[in-house]
Amino acid sequence: MVSLSRLFGRSERSSEVAKDRLRRVVAQDRTNVSPAVMEGVRAEMVRVLSGYMEVDEQNSQITIDSSGRSVNLVATVPIRRVKRESEAAEPAPPSPPPAPAAPARRAKPRRK
Image (cartoon, rainbow, N blue to C red; front, side):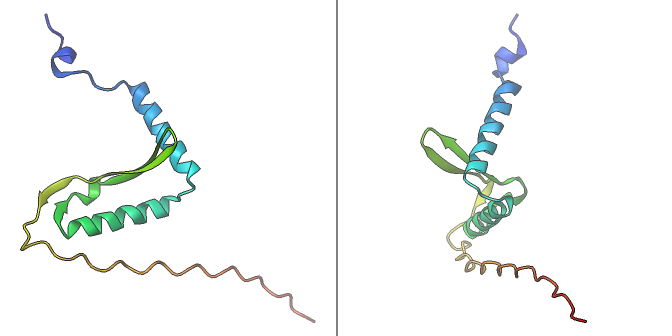
C-alpha cells in the first residue's frame, strides 16, 4: 500500500526549516539592517508593485539571505492579479525619508 506522504510528496523536515530560518536571521544580523528598515523596504516594494498588479500586502515578506559570498534580498509578494495597461498607474513618488531623531538634551544644572 502507498503511504500518503509518498503519494503527495514529502514536506520539509522541521529541522531543515529551522536551519533555514536561522541562516536567514544570521544573514540579516550580519548586514546590520534594522527591522524598521526591512519593513520600510517591504512597504515601498508593495507600494510600487501595487501600481501594476494587485498584491496580497498582508502575506508579503522580505528577508536577507546569504549563500556563499553573496548576500541577497529575497522578496515574497503574492500576486492576486496583474492589472491591464489601462488600469496600471504610475506609482506615487517615493515618500520622503523620516526626519532624523533629535539628540537627547541633557538638563543643565541650575545655579543657586
